[in-house]
Amino acid sequence: MNLASNKDVRRLCAPILVFEAIVVALAIPVAIKISGADPAVAGWVAGGLAVACLVLCALLRFQWAFYAGSLVQVAAIVTGVLVPMMYVLGAVFALLWLWAIIMPLRHASREQANSANHTS
Image (cartoon, rainbow, N blue to C red; front, side, top):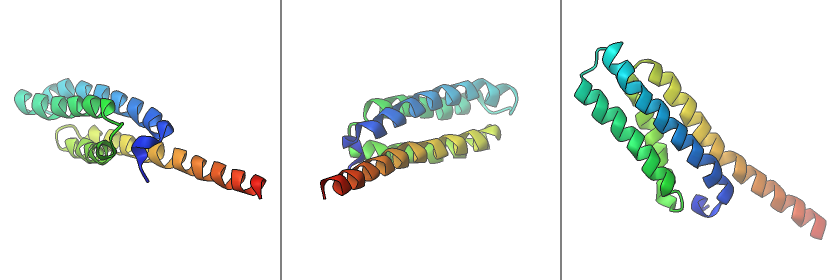
């Protein structure tokens, strides 16, 4: 199934990526001050991930952007190495990402089944 052609999927995935970018960017000072991470490493890793989220948000009209978005979810979980709380936050965003993909597809299949039942 082509996720990029489903407007409901794009409408749900885009804000998830935007909010994830904000959370990941806010993890930079936490990584530096509390976790004692090197500022350059924290800035490049979390900053790059935040930028990737925003860029992918604009590219959700392409099917490959959903695969890249899934990789971003994995990367967000891995940033827990710098800030342990990111394990939890990354998992939350990964679950939201999956929900945003699955729920509109379920809804569309139910609508198709209902319309098929009514036309029969």
